[in-house]
Amino acid sequence: MAILERYHFFLVSDDPEKYQVLKEIMPEAEWSVFERGAGAIEHIFNDPPDILLVDNDLPDFGGKELIRILKSENVYRQVPVILCISEEDLAQGIDFSTTEADDFLVAPLSRVRTKARLNLVLARSARALDANPLTKLPGNTSIIHKIQDLIDKKDEFALAYADLDHFKSFNDKYGFSRGDEVLMMTSRVIVNTIRAFGGVDSFVGHIGGDDFVFIVPVDVAEQICRMLIKSFDGIVPNFYDREDRERERIISVDRKGNTQTFPLMAISVAVVFNQDGSLTHYGEASQRAMNLKKVAKKDPKSSYVLDRRSSP
Image 1 (cartoon, rainbow, N blue to C red):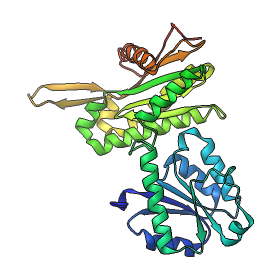
Image 2: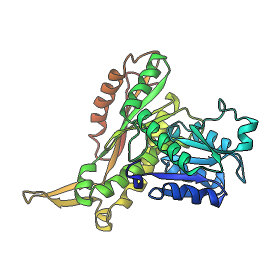
Image 3: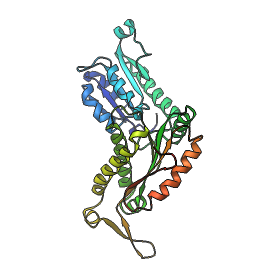
Image 4: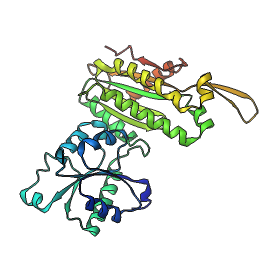
């Protein structure tokens, strides 16, 4: 694979020799190694890797259990997972119908075969998913398919479109690198807010730029919006320099020499509900949400708007 420095791999194994082999195979990639499954879980959720390699046998619990925990979170189902097994495991038989691994490697690792398998998994993942390269969240194609599938099945759900207000002014002053940090923070705040409602059947996608989508059950949608705004507003000031943070605005000069003043970033959320088959097509849901978001953006502070035509 080209430009491997872009890739970040997680290895969950207490076998130091395995890491040395993998590092030799792909030295340009960034590797994070965890000896125990419990130590890896939070890191995986906060910074999803491009590939997760997991030993079948771990000191604290089985590799298959770690995979189950990861794949049970809808947001992270797109992360490719490789299960590392032994010849003995293979001889005894692995029930892959109950193990959501995307591929497997057999120890001791063959350098040639292992490199080929890693490259294959990366290529397959790139073809199958349109995940946003920055946040690793599902992209526009996955979002459209998800929404239309729920509509076709006549499932009830709340569809929220969220984007950032005054993000461009932040990017203009602080640069795209700082802007990317804000987008990563926003994706994590959305995901972690929904995760706080344990067991909620949810979906989070990143359309692109500062536009996000999330789908949650109807009965918790407004509560999630409130918590999301509270978390975002509590964190975002920390991305500004002290002077801007203290005066709660950015003061800059445009190309014509005019002084411009912009508030700190806020988040606007528009929520559309599908109940009793009220939505018939993805485009209808999207258009309603776009119109609602215009209403939310009239408030200079973070806010959310519910579609009263279909809200509970």
